[in-house]
Image: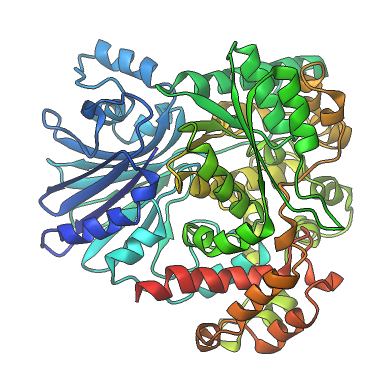
Length: 596
């Protein structure tokens, strides 16, 4: 786990190393253990390291293989690196380190661009070929690790977060109207390649990018996810055992590949609780678990301790439980927003930030349950969408997911940002892609490959890495996901969602956890906006910076401020529309305005 950055000059000049230094400063929290840089001709790399595998200096980056003429910066973990290393040694390659970083270099030398198809893990990396003067960048299949880039006529730059690119200077920071439409309609999801800023783009999951010496860029998909039934018929028992075995393998991979202890972020929900049970099956003694809770409001509890405590009691974990008062949440909110690679409205982004701060004092690696709800249909809106019989795929989805319909979005933004219904066009295109058998298959495939990437997965990476903590997500193991996408819909939607996981959990977890209604990482103060939190959001939206930016229609903002708890002022996914606007404006003030 690390932070990576680089610059490739396209104008015949050499890179400016102080620019790499400024980028590294904005990546320091992702990699507190070592900083390194490298330059050769038109190329410069920067790297901040979080030491997880091969803790020695031999595994420091940027890593240069002089014999092969290749250099690399890499963020992530390759879980099958030992098997690949043995295969490559059999082909005659010699290794000078014992971790997964060097395996990527040798794999690229052996198999070229197709090396990514052999990697099992989460990764974002860049390889420079000194001989061909060619830059190669790749991102893992499910976008667990981030990779942003910017380009103009003079140079191409990349980094693990947009803040590093902004620190380099010269980036177009004007608002992308298409991305703004997505931000306000899709729960702050802006699908690749766009970001909210016109001058910054991101590599799509399951893709690689090459840049030739003449500056020509080519992007290719190396992985596609299909959601169709297999030719052979399987019983529910057979499906359950197949998923159980795949989940065991996934958890074991993410436990074994680390030279440091591994803990679990235990929310008290089915997914993280099941991870604890499966790790206990692996024989992990004195497993470290971590939970966080916030203040209650009359409408909603601020913690799920009553459930996480039951898991702790059953498996005798070394548990750490943190309760955060609202005044600390408010005080730390700007700090958390500064660490967001992109503006994130999910309440649990701030929760993960505050939890990760404490967890990082105990361990460097945790397992987390992100992805299970999208892969196995755990959210309340999936059965609602499936039950709809009228309308197109897009209409069925939009009625239950979009935060704002297009008409309301036109009311939300100021005149310069009003345009076509970009979000509807994007979702329609994604749902129409071939290779998904039923409506639920089409929705879940889109969710797993696109929406989840820029919502919960991005939040977890950002907020854990802000404290030098690596979060591993077993439910997003690509082999498990490929198998789960073949499941008949009833094995997902049954039992109120995640039927097959509930079958696996029966006997491993208390029935009260398995049969409880689906819970959500609660932070009520960002949903029911009152008191100091209301004053905070009002001050942001009434600030001179917000008025000068002119992003939102003032009449709409005033309507939200007049009655933030009006039912119409909550989204279909139960989020506060006032928070959505305030968060975006605050992110721009903290991350863009302060760079100028």
